[in-house]
Length: 94
Image (cartoon, rainbow, N blue to C red):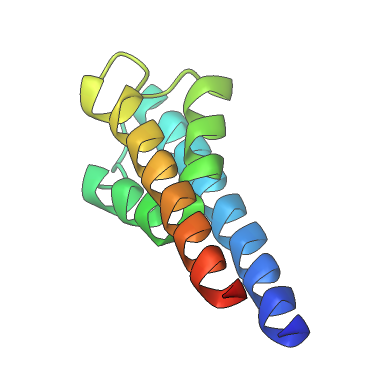
């Protein structure tokens, strides 16, 4: 159990850093009119565990905050992930 939890925490830290950096990179590219990271990719990063990093990047870099699908979508993903974690945790403890 301890090893699984350790690797899960490491994964979550890494994926959230990746999502945060993706928001930063996409903002910079948008600012200079260069090729952008697809919105689908940003959502995938949030879905696979990077929602906290994506939300932090969205507000720190003021990127995609006016797009409803991001300003609502990322927090909804985070809430669903929290519900899933609580559910799995409760099932595991029983």
